Image (cartoon, rainbow, N blue to C red):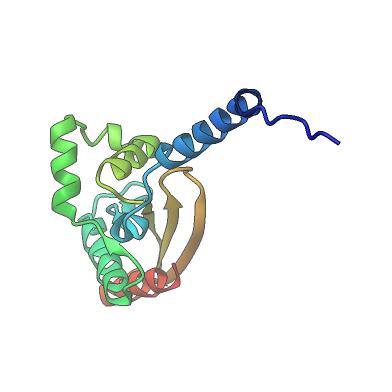
Length: 172
């Protein structure tokens, strides 16, 4: 009995399309996205808390409340907090004014530019004898709210405000 002669060229021609598809898949999957560095994977930017109080004419302490949130998140170590000066530098370079920052989409875009994967937004409201603080953790890429926290305290107790901001940040 005679065995059929091996035809190497025919086999290679038959497998060539499959080989090309495999190579293209490997190439495209390796260059599709860069893996996130550890500091990018945990990068977080915190925006100033907005005074949402009706008829607000008091001193705005949003920056102070945000500083407390940053302090707690840094100490916790879960995130790499993007420094405020870095955010301000990007805002200046892009010539983005405060009116544009009212739009959350603009803030998310800035978050991407500073290398933050997450952002913290929030506001506080004083009505009568109560101050209410609301903060939320947002994923920059999707805009999805991952967690929202609300705290209340006496409106006359500034240290209570800072304590509420710290407790809210600890829950994020």
